[in-house]
Length: 267
Ligand code: MG
Image (cartoon, rainbow, N blue to C red):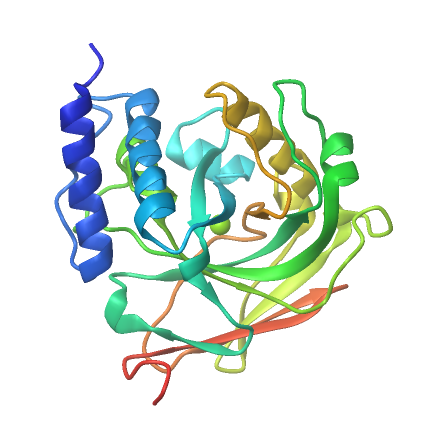
């Protein structure tokens, strides 16, 4: 039986509150008592609130895009969330850890769209045609839950752990660069801790964005022109701690950087 609308609103409010305060809560719904439709309905409430009371929507993010991640989570397709303008950090910027709970970081490429993307038949070719350019990016994810085993319904309700994102400055033409062949390394404080390639993202990051468009079409939502879409991690997300500086180097695409601090951006 679907969860009552009032209960969905209540859960969304609790998650919104936890996110704003950087203070974790117990999982209000799990696979034991809800399904992904309920979880996405909660996400819609959060999205509406971000649109009406926040700085506005910037686009979407796709998660669980590698075969290994899907197997680990027990899903047959990726999962998505939305991203807000207020979550953007400039390249080289400082991320205030006081506002976060247990952040992790991953390397991705982000698509910046030049035309609306919609429809349940969207494919990678349509995504490339609608893309202005692709940029190297770092995504910072952060669960709003107290420590515990990963729960797919709880994670989707929590906007797929979306927290911050950093876009690089290099603009790649996805019609000139084969996205699966882009490689990247992630260094923490000068030491390499991860490496990956675009092929880890559903075989091709453009395929990941096409999946998102088809998934949104089920709920009559589309990706408007001018959106930023984080297409999925090149490798697993790794934890960030105070004073950590991360540099991801993309070939091609160059570097994108951020530092975590407990002193805020003006330290
Ligand atoms: Mg991600």
